[in-house]
Image (cartoon, rainbow, N blue to C red; front, side, top):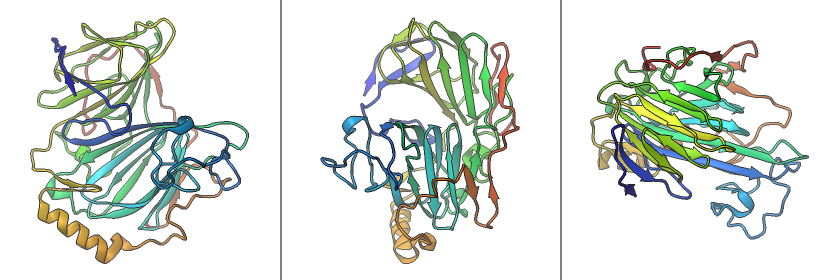
Length: 365
């Protein structure tokens, strides 16, 4: 729910739910933060601990600090469809195994981001293999849904891997790190390109997806953005954060004046503060959503269900609903044309510099 506390740089503060999706601003549809401290893995890459007392297939209760979600042996989200929007999945710790109806596959994590345009329809699964058999397997990820304009809702599905080695990490040298998945920061490197039909690829979309970490006592000024965008800052982890002249000590979304520079400070003497920035120009079109389908009208939603029932968006070429890749397999992506890629270990992405003065959009980068 919305709280008061507006200021010269904050227009509204919204308290975040204790679990489940967070409220978002157009053009974003959905944002969720998964933090699961899984136990050691077993031979099948599931949890070694007993699954007794869990509602398998719908386990979101957080028992013992982790969830199986829709998985029954390996945690995760077995096959499910999408149409009409994009998923941006940033995995900060742990791994995801991806498989889809186009025959594509991948394993990504530890700073990687998968950016998937569902377009006219795709079925995929996102499983969380627990590779470590000796110690805990922590999973920390954001999944963000970004809308598509009507002209792009029925494009061919596509996914792009943004490997951790390619995503810029801007460090001030004073306890601040900014990871720029999309939207360039002056003084940092250019983020890798998003999919070609993404709203973020449009010249005026002004999409920025950043994580901001402030060590105890650290401060940084978020540079001003362009007029006409929605700009939200999520307080993800930490004891407290100061945003402009407001001090916040609970998980909230702070909606910002987009053209204002915003002073950020971590007042804690012991605990790091972590923030997520979502910025973008809204898509001025009607939204019709039903579960995993996001279109512009109810009739289009009905058609999406009919198409999925008739075609399964290409079928499912995998032996199970939630396949995982071999334990020995490293991070990789295999695309529809059969070619594979893996992260380059030589790519330098960390930049240390003085705080930047302005922000550019991903399309300008």
